[in-house]
Length: 482
Ligand SMILES: [Zn+2]
Image (cartoon, protein in one colour):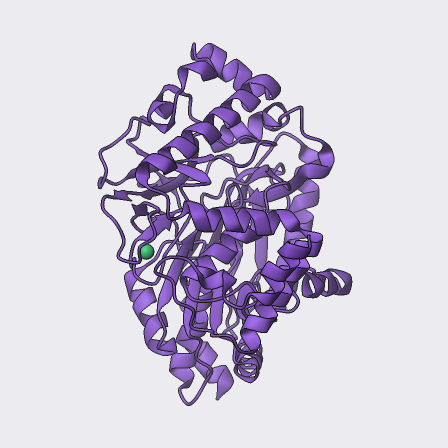
């Protein structure tokens, strides 16, 4: 313990020793805060520190070392699923496969694919029976497809370490101050205080992505300026909205050193606008609520991302889930090598992407993938210029209430939220009531909101377009400011 304490707390540049990774923070105040942060984790969450150390080693492993590690972790995952998850046991049996038949990632194609519908229909069966409840953390999403899904994360996996590693690629320690444009639904004072304590000594300036208006953006930018926040982080749509606002508004404003976007496809014009407004590189991170931290850009890999291949496996397949050659775009299947509690094996996440052959000039050996395609940037604008940038997650808290949903905004700005009810009518009614209340609160009576049960939601080009708007309201933001 003592030597660990000395290593973490007194060694100023421990964090920045990764090959090809030179700190931009130096050993001033930030480094002290980073040491304090790591000391806190060492005391209260030592697993995070250990996992982080391992990740910093494994990112430099050779191809053979990485493949050996992946095979070992995959076998651990498969045997655990076979022995303790009734769903996987049955599925593997039906496919005539035993975990002994899988020697590594190259054999993954022999295993059945896990769909969103599978997760919805077999949630309890998927859960591994050998994991105590205290290790389970619920996670919900509707974000990429309009089909809400509930999964469980394994609390034994210290996800923070994966984030620390990504920040290290950009030259930051774990205590970096972040300007966060994120979803905050009914966050209580207690919850906020806990978040503050959890993230201390780093500071987070928050802008609620659920209702962004000129006033909240001004306050956010002022606070970021005051704290000299170097990283702006948020949903692509929300960050883009902020950038558009600042560009229209002009004048002087806070500029972060890096912009970190996530949860949407990277649209080139949007990226360029964000980079132009903030005069900072825009770095993309790919992950989902089902599997956090799948890939992220380093400072040199643009527009490609390093796969977190020492913790996740990513396959690219055709429409029938057969492997496609490297470099070709296809459907992404994700396997989470760490989550033993709720095994995610060959999960059809609903995104498209491609693997990029070759190495990145940063020196990190993790393989590369191209930018993820297939998600939409979804923002609903209100007549007074307020933006709702997290419209895609309105049913996240009630994944069992609806089978799918779609949000339509007409040219007058009014919203119609169409949903396909799930089997439990009581749950659906309750969810619809709460979603309506939340939405009405967010729009301040400016527009009408209707929730309508439907039998079918039409697809466009084979994909559910779950948010679309015919209302053109962005110019109102300027009017409001003036
Ligand atoms: Zn790189």
